[in-house]
Image (cartoon, rainbow, N blue to C red):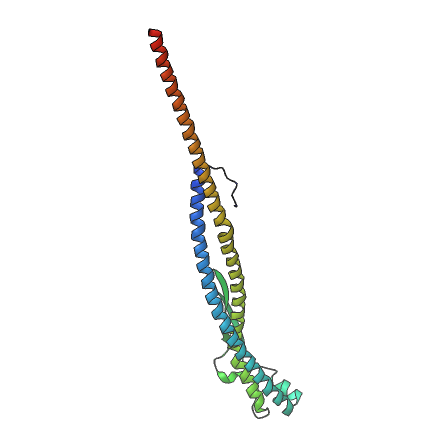
Length: 224
């Protein structure tokens, strides 16, 4: 039996009963939070798996086209073609609160909305595979950013799930049993004290009755 170090009084018993109610309510809320976090986490894991496959396939395709472009173009011509990109991108980072977990959100901003601005060179002196390589890399950038966002969210979610799980276990296996055992002990102690007090009162009552009877008898004998 695990007991708290408190005095076995009715005031402490009332306080412990209130704490037990609060602990049980908190335990239920934390379990609900843990379950919801697990649901969101599993959805993110599935999305992460899908995005990773998409990004890896896009990178393989881009590398394949780039390898072919390198084989038909000189290094100097390739470097000149990619020296001055006409398109640029900035990244806005915001935050989102999901079940008390602050997860990042990435929003890309392109300098221009024209899809042809990804090519910084003329098509006459370059290989078509270079075009496909640039197009492949440009196409997977949104997926790469989303993948980074999802992976970071998974890490934060996993940490919060573990922290919530520890709190649930602490309440379920330590605090609530301690409150219940201590309440049971104080209740038994108070009942025992009450029985002892009742027994003492009965003994005192019997002694007083005995004294009254003896006094009456003494008075009767004295009158005779």
